[in-house]
Amino acid sequence: MSAPRRVSPLLLAALGTLVFLNVYAPQSLLPVLAREFHAGAAQVGGVIGATMLSMALASPLVGVLADAVGRRRTVIWAFALLVLPAVLAVLAQTLPVLNGVRFLQGLLIPGVMVGLNAYIAEEIPAPERSRALTAYVTGTVLGGFLGRFLSGLVANWGGWHAAFWLLAGTSLVGFLLARRLPPETQFRPHRDPRSVLCSLGTHLKNPALLATCGVGFLILFTLVGVFNTLTLRLADAPYHLNSAQTGFIFAVYLLGVVITPIAGPFLAARGPLVTLISAAACSLLGLLVTMSSPLPLIIAGVAGAACGVFLSQSAALAAVQRSVTQARSLATGLYHLAYYGGAAVSSVVAGHVFEAAGWGGVVPLVMGSMGLAALVGLLGWRGSRSSYG
Image (cartoon, rainbow, N blue to C red; front, top):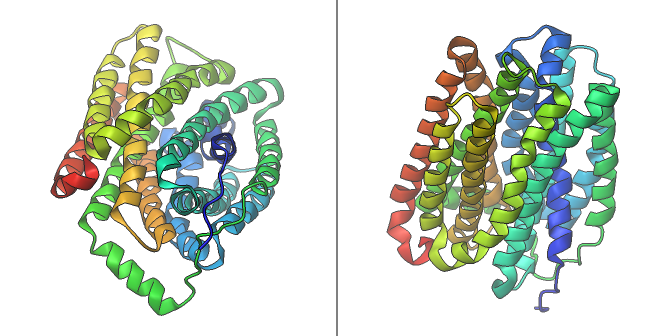
């Protein structure tokens, strides 16, 4: 078996950035789309929820595909195909059509995420793996910010259609960069359906993996619940922010670019469990601060909440890889099924809560989900202290 080739952390960070530009880009456009399509918070939240739902549904299937044809090939083709739904979104004339295109987009995004996570686990030597994973997660954080920020900025200048032209271009760049990933040396294809079912059964009997899936569901429920409704809150009185200004609010994501690499050594030394509990405490404190009215305090509170979610995501991704020794793409796919399932549910639930009770109703909802994430991690990972800290 050949020795793993060195992979640039910058390349992994760039790929994480480019794929996550697609995930949350319309979030800063929600007030604009709500006005154009005469939709309420729950309805317009479907622009995010449709993508999250399809990402959740596609992730396990993409895991099976990546285990069969290879992680690198899956990443490359996923980026290539992402150009198509971005162009189709430009042509959408109604909200249901836009949601349908966003659903298609979500079917392709997991090809990059699931394939790349398994690629990192297998192709990068163990001593460098935490750094590589941190680089990738940092890239996803940067992509989450840039998608929201650039789409808001571009839409304020050229309308919301221009934001999707931007996504088409960045997906093409992702395709070109993904081709620079070194060929796999550790990958062994799994194409026997019986083997897939056996691996699935093994994963579903793995308590630590199931707990990690629960944590993933709850932490993204928190993040999407906050940011879907935050844009609507700040577009209303007394703030009246436009799409470009709300895009600037998402600069709090840049803290994740700083915090996540710094937390890498902490995660490696203390393990996912301690990291998760510390991160949840940070998020809960930040969410409490957002109950205030001054805009600077709201931004500070959202920053704290977001940093906690970023650290929780790093802990959960590390926990997935520590909990399995085979069929890693399938395990990562199951995690993303739960993770993005939480986002899809939150897009609807948080929207209805915001319509009924405003921000004062959303905050207790997301604080409950973040606190429950810490509890699930504590109970599910506690039996494996040697692995989970």
